Image (cartoon, rainbow over all chains, first blue to last red; front, top):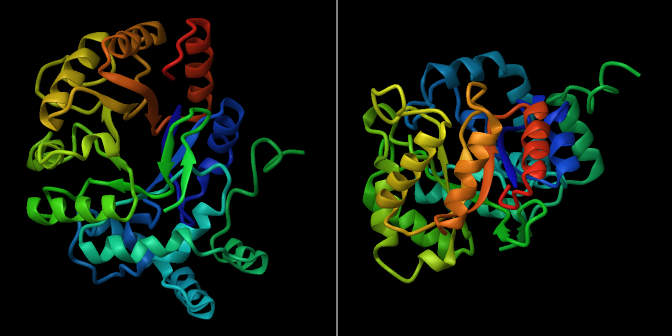
Length: 145
Length: 177
């Protein structure tokens, strides 16, 4: 009835095969790690707290430093916190049932709520695609004809 | 809150799902209970956990925290409770994966920790290529007949595995998947 997959602006691999499969079989899609371990929510290279706030997240933040800079600047333009934009981007996708929010604190829970009210316009979605490119669509057209 | 259907089912879930992986290892039981209270009051009805959460600090810990929260009363019927099976829960060769043997046992243990008589969405935490689909589906069908599980889902599957799961379930007329 549902598939829970890792999916975020930073990790869009499931757009190739999983999303078309879920659509074909009428399955709900529940993205986990919608903030990519926290880096899309502002967790940075200095982060200490949180289960995934270990070397894995730090490495991810270092690896994506230029993209994260551009992303934060775009979020500022939009006028929404990065975590809200990352969740709102998932909620814009009709294949997505509900992203998993994994709050460690009450504040993190309250902050994510706004995402269900935010609508991202087409130019913003396009800018997000430029900063965080996906696999180019669904298989096989993404890589064949 | 905005609600949507879970895939093709008639079940309505909130468009944010409360993940509980931090409960225990990172977030105290008291704070975890407060977060669940607040989530529920905000209209989040979709709660997700897994038998293995707690991880190296103790598999089952997170389910126990949720179980003690559910035991406070008048809330179980307000949430869609999702948990998972597959991860290693003990040192034995059958304390993991998706054999019929382990599914039955893992479900019983999750129910005890969660202090409830049923799981709304029981998810396979990972594909198990060593267990035949007929065995997995028979175990899940049995849990549904016993009223212990309502819907079955997956996690961390590949696209083609979703296809195989659906085709084999359809051949059995298995309606829980």
